[in-house]
Image 1 (cartoon, rainbow, N blue to C red):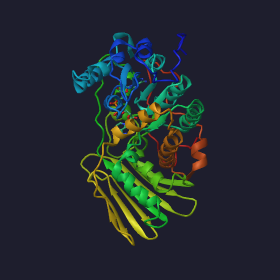
Image 2 (cartoon, protein in one colour):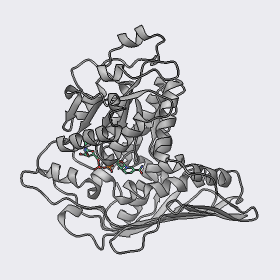
Image 3 (cartoon, rainbow, N blue to C red):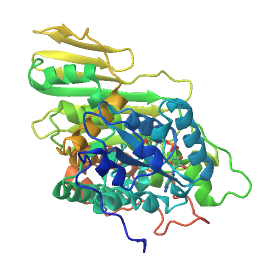
Image 4 (cartoon, rainbow, N blue to C red):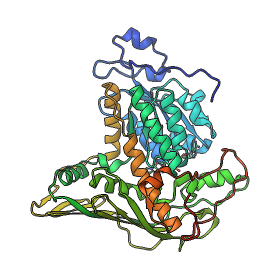
Length: 435
Ligand SMILES: NC(=O)c1ccc[n+]([C@@H]2O[C@H](COP(=O)([O-])OP(=O)(O)OC[C@H]3O[C@@H](n4cnc5c(N)ncnc54)[C@H](O)[C@@H]3O)[C@@H](O)[C@H]2O)c1
């Protein structure tokens, strides 16, 4: 915990009158933002994790519809990542919107404690886009400090992390903070139209779902001279399960979130899985599997089947098929195709949207209206679906929802330090114990 006193977040972001706005403790660029909708004070945002998604999310925050926002602090483990992100934001904003990038030199924080310094800056909202292994701690700090949050998926990599996120969601609720999550497909107009019909009964009762996320591997970065084990693992974070949760948790969790959506966010009773590591090689590829197949069984007897793969030169597929008693729904997110066949056929023919922008439009509208959105439980539970599938695959055992939620297994080192960090062995079903 930093000894520095944290500035309290303003509960009233939108003071009436220019004098009040001018008096607010804003950096100059931010203060010069033009009034929006008759209010003067922009929402001040901090970014933690300045990689691909973080840079994109920061831009979306600054382009949030109908709301004045500015970025006032950035934090990353590495200076090169922070500088690259700042430069990309500068270019994307251009001269016209340059004032929204109000991160002075004193508010660019580098290191494993950068998150604390961003959160402790004078701001209203933080964007959490580091590898998910850090998310529970970052989220806790943010809500305790009274910050609104945009949190990327997944929420955590293990059950203690999921439980911590559930607690943080409660803290956010008790403080009237917004917590919006990055399960972006649920912000997609086409998906919303399809799932609205599925949940409205257009295909009857949902009995089965098949979803897949079969893709190629994510690239690795060879070790550079001078890198400690910690730096080497962070630079290759997707491949170490304490940082990513394995690819079922980091990537395929999107499919499992759509599975949760299809079943009204009721959790399954148990999961049975196979998985393994056939085609990964090289130390940078860490200790994660390259394929999973999981069966989830629901309390009413319905079953859902998930498959995910990260192996080169194999067929790509990332679709969802929902089977009901009176029809079937097909969702091909990338094509895109949103179709219902059966007693009441339907196909989506309207416009699409930018689902990532939609997340931020809704988050900042909720902050501006002081009507908090809290998606913490959804974020935690969909994350647990993936962790539960991974546990079943790693151990070879049938894992119940209760077991997964109450697991005491904590991935990763006790202390976060630059230096030596051994790689945990690759799991072997039948030998790796459930903990
Ligand atoms: N919703 C989506 O479609 C989507 C798409 C891509 C990524 N994501 C998620 O966003 C998150 C980030 O992914 P990415 O693609 O931007 O990865 P990335 O590697 O491009 O960025 C992660 C950044 O976090 C930094 N970082 C690592 N540890 C840190 C720490 N302890 N403190 C501060 N910074 C730290 C890294 O240096 C890096 O700059 C992940 O959770 C990922 O699953 C979501």
